[in-house]
Length: 287
Length: 306
Image (tube, rainbow over the protein chains, first blue to last red):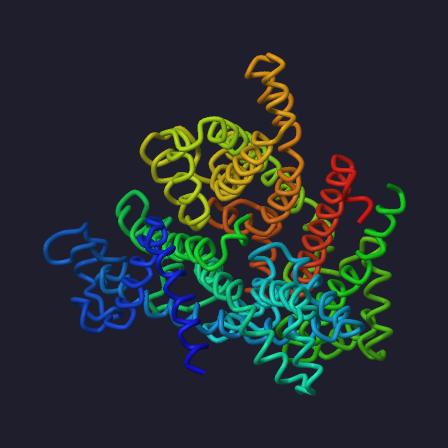
């Protein structure tokens, strides 16, 4: 047991060593950490209440009192952006966990058992993928209706095929390996083989996909909220904050710039960190 | 080749059936009586009954589905609940617009992406390479709708070079097309660069250089031709994604596209509109992917024998 443990530690050290050398990944990791910290510490960081506005101070440009200015209802933009991190992180986590759990199960069952299961699951994934990009999430919202819960579900379902395909591919190549054959020969149950042999060895691509998906889900979810199909006002969500910004482009351009900048930074952080992880976890995964 | 295309088309059928099942079930999955939904708010009982008869909603589900399919095949997507116009008329106009927008976008994205990718690959780790790869990172990280707002802020509000919305001329389409194409140009640039770098390292390029061919001919004739094969797949895929992403651009610039039509349909509970847009966009996407695969097989004979 201790030998296995030390082997794992050295593997972890090697990955960490490679990750540390990757400057872009470090920058991405720092952005992600700051984002998570902002989300957790929102009540302590924000100078004002995110949903309380002063109508006498509408659309004020950034100044000492309101560092990023105020929105059309006189609410402090900085506080709303900070609280927006909270709702974004919540959406990302819920959606990615849904996609990961369902995707892993579908991918493992399809890849391991093959045959009709595999065929059905993969055709189902093809059908989901027949809706291009955000259109799939919109189609799901069309069925479920707008709102935060349905947004998280839609963003989750939207990401299932990616996880299912990756896990299936990994299981397909692993199940012919000797250690799996050996496990079968000594009479291990399928459940154990799936979760104790195949899953741990598929973790590298799953972790990479999880990180990169956090970026895609944020883009999609904020897009849906921008369209009015996701998080509803007055909740401070970055996409929703931009939805009526067009009307104030001339009088208050900061209303249109700040929330989008937040989305872009966080998406960039996850992209950089995910790319870095991919290179460090397994250099062969590079595309 | 014919066999390969036939196989791909056969594989397409279950997907198309799945897509049609999803659009069909939309009306039955939202809460409420489908006939009442189709009749619209404040409809009198006679009208609801008439809708039930006309759409065969009193029939078993599988018969309704076959009726739905046979109507769709004949181009009948039903009647819009809001303005009582055949859905096909609205779809036709809106869809053509989205196609135009996506087409212009993919042209812009291909132009920028190919040039940036090729130059980057010939000067790996140069200033240009680093700049365009940072640019690509921005391209894939920026939300389409926000980039659209920024373009509007700079080029319509301040510089007044382009109109801030609406349709009419090519001029109206430039900013929306750039906003929509930014992410794709980033993907194309990355893919072109990676593919070129791989090809340039191969023996036949070394031979071409050793034979004393001019560098421009080596790069643009020999290397680019081979590097383009994987890039073609990206073109198709990105064009398809644009059909979906267009909904965001259309909203920012208030353009009459099919994405916007669908979102309005969701808000107004105009289900025939939503069903029609879903079917049309998904079917087009699937067909674009089919054409991409065929093009890929044409250029790369290895694929056909898999």
